[in-house]
Image 1 (cartoon, rainbow, N blue to C red):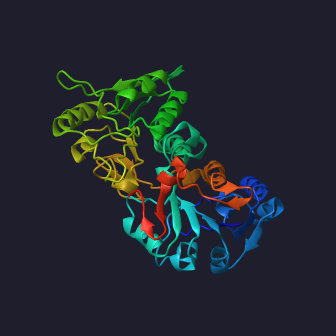
Image 2: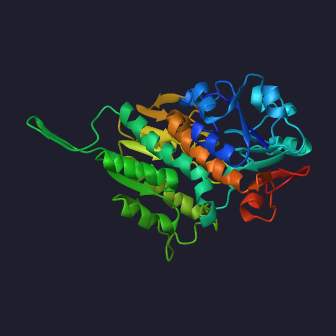
Image 3: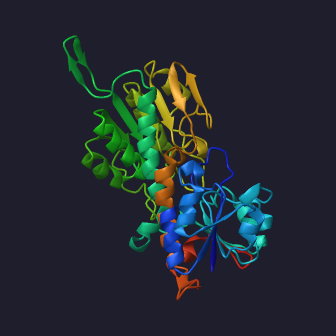
Length: 377
């Protein structure tokens, strides 16, 4: 059994899919591990550290991939991509595991299926107790929420906590978090630790208790004779809302945003464009020097004015649209992600052989390409 760890080719991607620690664990499962030269350098894992862990350093990408049973990646594979993203390097029956973005990249998944590559997308790992240690979305979103707060604070022209000095008192900053999933909750916790006055908005009923347990105020839309109780899917994601709800939401957020210093948006709907929560008019009414960090930038953005992978200033408000916040914490992000992948790969191995149980709920639901067919999208 052979695992290949490849060097990512996408812009702004500094993560790697295995750490020296997990290389040792893969070897203990019976794998030989090949890693592309310098694959871990941007995550501060040297070639030497991988060699010491028992991996072989390979310089030729085609040789690396074509000899592997399993290829571990961070990002998706392209039909005519460069290096490890070139689908032509993959043999029939190769198992590919990574953030494949299947709902956004259906053509790429079809290419994998047409080439008879078994592909597993970590975004589709079901949210069940047995799969918690494999939940790469959560591990990466946690870091994104933290980093979004840290980056916004570094760009902000004021102090965050209340400060009392002989010259006067500095009021604490007000931070609003839109979306209280994993990233949002971590953002709330981080902003609270820094001393900000924090509020949060989410359409899901379950989020209210979680937000308030972290010491933040919950901003809530309540329709006549109704609450937000039915605005959540069985998987725990927010549903797309009714027009009536969206109107009231817009009015409430406009009123709330006027008083904020920093707004961090995290709202996503799987497989769809990110919902627009912040309009041009809302930005106009924000205080000069305010900050917006849009964690949904890659999916179109929660802010009307967001530009992907750019920081812009509109109406005196700085809007940050970086697409890959976990990569800005590449060492920790890679360490967590590699553990997620190791726990996932363990499901495929029995008696030091690759034996995939296609009835296993985790493998079955995360598989997007098998036996020449597209799955689960």
